[in-house]
Length: 321
Image (cartoon, rainbow, N blue to C red; front, side, top):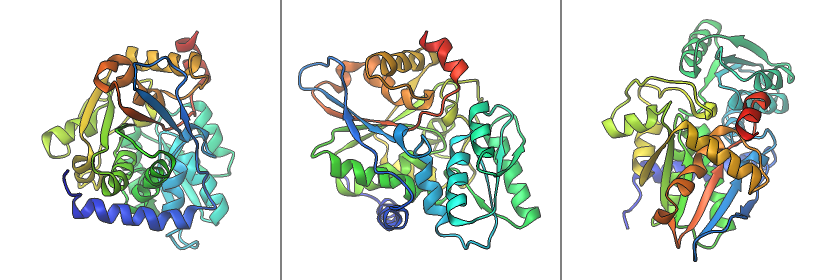
């Protein structure tokens, strides 16, 4: 048993404080057991952030951040969709003036959802990382507070409230599977879990077509990677220089599993037809390791974080049918 690092403990403490602030803004989501036939002694449970108020875990981080920013201070963020939706709902509740910069590849359904809140939308950049660059530029020129989708201590703390809930909902957890994007989700959950249950293994699941965080952890520093189209669009994009998430993720992740597009598609079909849940690709990504190599996790109590369900209907229909 390794003692959590000081930065992990500090992040966990921020999650406890954030939970009190955002309690009225987010939903405590259910943990549901799998319906699949599993190997003897094996359990799979789903933490269903796909049933969060905005259809994604991002509401937690957005609520934690905006609740810490003065209302008279305009805010700006960049998003592949879910973070923008979350910030838009939160800003509507808190009264903040919000701008969201979206990449050119944003799913149409997500863009429309953001605009429905009356949020100012700017389209810029071929992917999420370039949209973030543009948002930071606008923040400097227009005097807005920039809200990172992941590289912010309060955002990370908000995502960590998921870990607090899981620990309350299950008496024992051997493995938690979390999809890896910029690292805010896995860093937040991992910090909380490792602070309370250090023997629980945090397993990061990386889409092969967009694996910047996994490559950066391996290198020990932020590295640039090629970003190809992926069903797990919610976790596509790069990692900020001087990222808060890289050292945190490196501290808490026990294993990284790489998953290709066919394997993500297979997990989407299992969730739809065996579990009766249609989710987005980034959520199915977290289940894939249990389907690819079930023997590796046999006899264990496994939690799969279903991060969201804001999918493109036309694209997902081609996968499911």
